[in-house]
Length: 312
Image 1 (cartoon, rainbow, N blue to C red):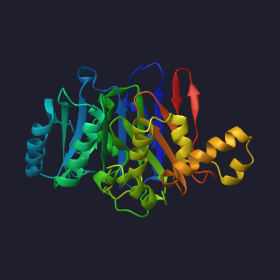
Image 2: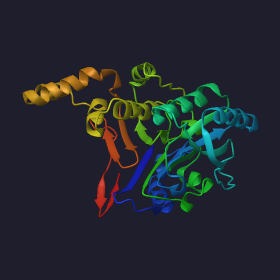
Image 3: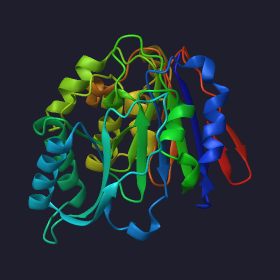
Image 4: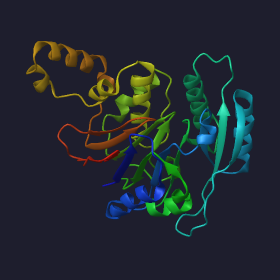
């Protein structure tokens, strides 16, 4: 089950969260209420240069530990609670705090630095979990239906040029705030319907590069794989997508020699990154939205364009 939706305006025009909420509501029959969420790009123009950390905190002690750590590794430009509404459908299981941060000036690679910060918080600070960590964007998610998550986080008050939404129907993992979609790292956001049956192989491959997967949902690996292949290894989005969802060998064997060699090298080099299982996935970053299917389309997607807008 699960339901995915994405809107991108290629010219950067920002639209209200009401539109993506409407798309999500159409698919209510696909959800069971154990996870809903939204990703939005372009919502923090006043803090465009800072990394926006959305962090779930179990209690005040977790917040104190998190802030003590952050003050030692980044410069906090501004912080405060993410605005929420009191709704009976979603009990407030976590405090959601927002930090706009700069990394130290002499840092060689700022993105690598923030990834390390995220991994440290998620793995070493009990009761804290980073929901999003990109610039001028944010993820809002919880255990509940997307329509209720939208009310909880007042999604209609935000304007973004790219929106995605997700409603869960988990079949092999429990529903909890951290396991709701979208999954994020830096500017990458991933929402997913289906199952990543290659999760174990993908997880072990990512761990050799320093990524730690502990959020109890198979989708987590997809966000990290895109960060690794595109940002770290320098592949194009198209090549990275091919590495994760390559053609069958029988189709590669039938290609002209030049293409056959290229696709063979991609499959062999990135074999541990290949995704298996039935899946439909939407991936976004600051300027791109793409859809990925499993190779026999067990989890189909529908894509459309209308003027400057693209939809999945």
